Length: 419
Image (cartoon, rainbow, N blue to C red; front, side, top):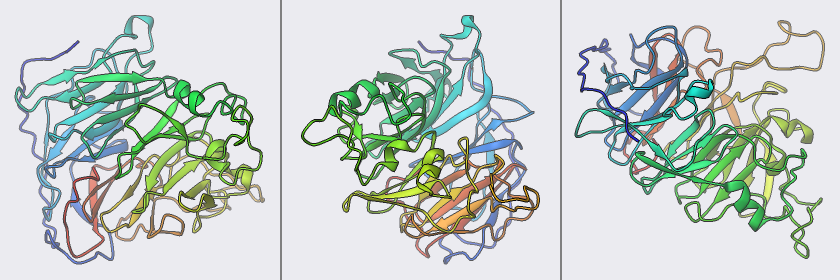
């Protein structure tokens, strides 16, 4: 099924900022304003394409819906954006749920359709065809419940998305067709002990996050089953915890697994990777292990897990408060904490108890520090999904329609993956 409208050319050009930083500036000490005048709204979405295009959308906005903006070159000292033709959705809940690009640098967008029975087959994923200039609605091999929750591009060009209370989906043609993959059944086949999960669930639940490392291993962050992954492009799936089941009886859970937090995570909001392919993830159930940040790193070679440090205790405790973790080509990692109120069991309650919000930076995925330098005002977590990387340059966005950049090295190059 495809949905398209006559090609519409939008000439909305947003202000060009006179930044002093050049395209090969040295490592930045602070975030620098790159563009302003964009449509404001909550939870901006950013994506960088292989041709260095930077795409911008909004999860929630009081203005026009279904609009994506494009800047031609993320390496430029400042950004100039144009609005793309509106997405020809049939029904829409919220606005832009997820945003990425394909190998041809075409934007790929995921939405939630309407919740009425008449809307259940409405399109939920779209790609802007470069030749026609029109959006094409993706064809799915099986319905995806509400729609696309998380979306990403793999190094080989495949496009993946995760759906709420549904499955994972893979496209090998740039987002025009998606094949549903029942990862719960495939995990069960590899690890018979895995379900019911530690929380008693008989499956993964919602797929809240999906990410691919530089090797091409696909990780899904689930509602009830922690982290699961595929090392063979979705043909088989297994727990990230290799000790989840007893070696002598794989139908029985291993109560002594040293990597059990990967299973118990719950509501996995974000997945990122170190340069060595070790996953860093956020899961609210990690308080069970007295991990006060609810963020951890797994060492896949040593088969260990550890809580991340550098965060205010209890600053994330519910919901999907971290939705993106990115890594530059030189290994610098960034995350943006969420906007949900944090919990401190020690009285007095907020506002007397203060929490660090906004952007955090790490060189190893384990030790983090707040890094909001250069961004004025209240960077309070309402932009938690706004992170994208082009080589050693990282971008973020704030809810007032501004985009900021930071150079983490004096050499800006693209390694072919990171959007």
